[in-house]
Image 1 (spheres, rainbow, N blue to C red):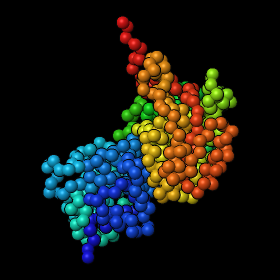
Image 2 (cartoon, rainbow, N blue to C red):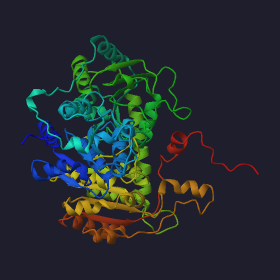
Image 3 (spheres, rainbow, N blue to C red):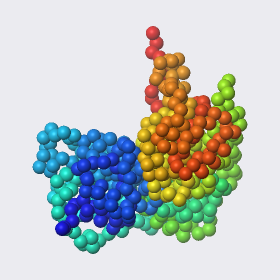
Image 4 (cartoon, helix red, strand yellow):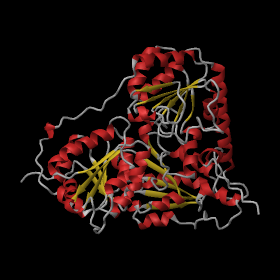
Length: 572
């Protein structure tokens, strides 16, 4: 019996080292499910919602050097998976999204079939490339092309739509007939490298920025070496968080604006900013007028593998099309042992600003409670968590106020030990992210910090964790609010603004899913509860009752992200 398109798909995934496949049962993709389920080489898991399959694949790519596949059934499954794929698209994460379709002779133009959706059009806006496999003989070519495009250049998700009759059609294929194309790593042109070296050697107040492109190119060590050699001020984006060690002498902070006062002031006062694999998107306080304008005389250099990214968000003195690792290797060699006449007094002042920010965060945490209450504040909670997590843990941050405080007190040891979604800013990606990270690294602790709002979005994925014994530890900052919007409702004096939530006992919910669950109401209870969670032998949820706690950088969202919105009531 010859192969089918579905079995060839699985063989090509194996050829490229893609082990992880996540999805929700789809009869039209049944042969793929059957093959993956019978082959122990694959880590094949089904989720409770298709969105979670996309997030799990995202987490695999973020924490490994590989990528993963996700799938959902025709129509509603395909549409349900969109948020998971869109999050990967926004963060330049490679994954393969698979959707089955109705019979090839009944689609495009469609015949108003059950579960009909314009699947190719739907995914074209959130993938690097997508295609419908219309002829079995072209399937191997299209699968190989999809996997190559997902990982080359600026990475991203790709999508293959497979009509159900095509998926089961005979397909003979020699795996060696299509050689693997090595992912290109373009080096910087010599003239541009020389110009970059000159700029760095002349700069008095230089700042080096590590973006997600540094992590994806495997250039963490090379960036760290550049910082060590030059002693220049260094910061990271959210997707670059962990590239610079927390104790590096010239490190001013990570995760963009959440790095605090030293990072923000340095990016405003720098005479040279060099961004490696950095889009300068919303979290970065650069060229965000009127709050963070580009000051007169400041030069910005952007090194990116994608020429379309150059100058998109910032005015450039120099744009370099190059792979981050290739550029950093060449730059370290060209610079030798010194960077130039940087102003040590200025860097010292920026580090003092960083310490002022740390002191403010610690002062909030030291108070333990929010003003006028006996409710634990989120700063104290986040700082205590930071003292408990093991050094080798993979940290997963969900969105909202929980992510602000988490970024403030916890620091990953490496970018592959950190999963967050700054590009799309999803709420609820936390639990499926944690599940995906644990599936890829069963030997490592995986710690998720989320809020009650975010946890409620994908809480069903606790059952996925329990079913596959993915021993994640989830800590819920339970303040019973859509926290980031609470100040807005209070400013408008509207008790019916829609941000108050009922207090959910997530510990009991977790127990109902077969997980370990505990409710924590006092800070001193947390260390013992955390230890019991680590020893539970199953997924664990610690539901920590706390109160919404304003963060020192909250104003950024109003001044930059929501700039131009007038919340003042109209004059009567």
